[in-house]
Length: 590
Ligand SMILES: [Zn+2]
Image (tube, rainbow, N blue to C red; front, side, top):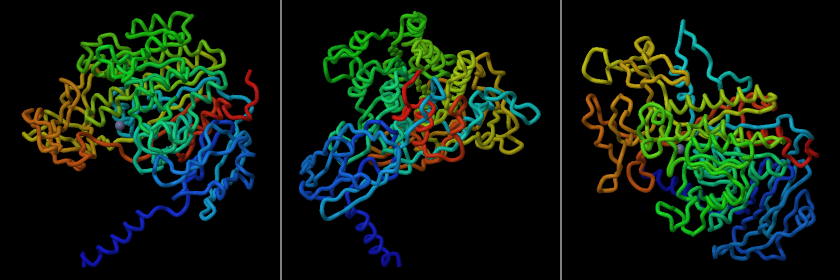
């Protein structure tokens, strides 16, 4: 019977692989487009098209009349044997529903776009968007327990991000997959358009070059048009996906050298994080550039103060003449809170004076708030994701506490400065993380597995009371949170925090198979866990992967009433655009 079913499956596969009869049109059907925002329009025909036969209309009007210029027909795009119609850098100023129809004389395709205007005046002066990369419900709950504790069954004191009036669930899937990466997830927040894995500020078309895909406007471009200052603060490399989404237009998030140029050309006012090698000319030792451009020098010549340490950052931010600031504090990622403040592992010995995300954010706000019209700031706690990939629970949770500390500082700043800042806190995607109880070293027996307390046996962990910053000063306590990862490579489960440095769960062996890292084999109580992710081929996993669950968005401040219920991640852009009146019908700003 199994054999008899095969041909059916094969037919279905063949049908799915056939080219779709109609054209592909970008922006995609059901796109939400900010009135006045710039975008590229592209039509991909399934085969060669005759210029004389091609027709492109919006609400029945020829596109050249609507946009004031005509699209170009690429007869044989990138030698792929098919034609494309491309019209770059156009906008629709009038809000409304647009039915776009395209025909090559044989096939006709329709898409509907919703072009939305924004109120005439902004309701918020500033917007601070917090992204906990990979920040999931499990992280939130565990961080709350670590930093607040429980008394009489209730949490003692709230997280700053919990103490917000508005909340929504955001979906995270993209145009190519139910699973997103940080690039298309962040791009949804900073453009309002859905895209595909690895893409920033573009739709994923069939173009060959990563910079040739149809662009959509970024939040930085829209905010700059209104005279607002813009900043991005992270503890990843600044070229990494989330901060890059503020300015970048590329199909490939790894285009770091191009992304540095895009940051510079965008005139973003504050940019802070790690990742200096892509700013240095190729002749400089340690450079990762392929050209001889010295981007640190270019930023300086464009009027930026430059900082490589926390001390230099604070001095630059305190100087009232500083209105532009580039801070690069590490060659790679800035160390996370557990290493930076307690364990001193990671790269802390090499970079002993790195700011944490809270300090960087405060310096950024000082600089950006010198723009009297207001500012937009992205603040990313990036390593929640990276430490969740590496299945390093304590490091991920300390960086979740750091995220909340930054949110608290932003709320305090807003309260003291006019209360006209919209504060949004969310994640770009989730991880398969879960808090299942505690692990108690003093429980009877030998096997660590049987020291896991579930239900009433979990009780409460015995971390020391948190310090003034909300961090317990030790993670290697005898009864600790049992925080588990649902998708894994083969690895050794140690049931303990990684005091000697970030966990490296799996490595590729000589046969190219991903296997558990033997480094942890002899830790007392360690056991080998077979993974549930691919261990061979291009997608062999050496760590955990992103998951498809919704993420939580909480918000406070003017405009936060638009955050409610269940939303698409791309809807967050409209919340920001409306709060700041970024759309065409916004009229003049005061
Ligand atoms: Zn990730």
